[in-house]
Length: 176
Image (cartoon, helix red, strand yellow):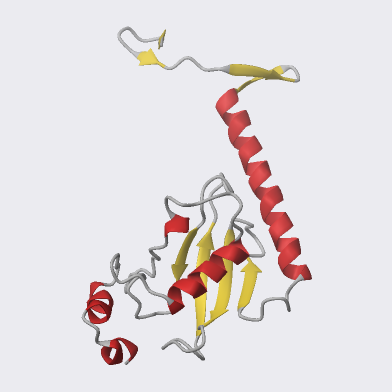
């Protein structure tokens, strides 16, 4: 630590790096580099989604026109589930450290599911938390969410009512 201009006041020492004729805080350089890498990755995913629109008819990913870190997905409910025939909207908020950190994803469409918070739409899915890998893409996250819709994990519910119905074997109650 470095002694500040006022007595008794400490401030952190900055790691300054030369860029051209200017000294720049390395934290800013690093953050800018991460953001550029994130933008490049997201742009690559955007081009891939545009190229392969018909490859996965159950998923439609849409990038916000003014912010590449905001996406929306429209997914179809999986067959042979209570969600079959339904269309569900998801909101993606991508961190600047993507793909090193997972996107934040939530349901905009209300859904009665053990692993989806009834009010906020938050999704309890391991790949969005501690099992994230940079190998995942926004498209593969959508596939994982569709798989979760078809195979709920009642033992780790965000919606306890839905989880309790499944754990007690009340499938009819869950599907109604």
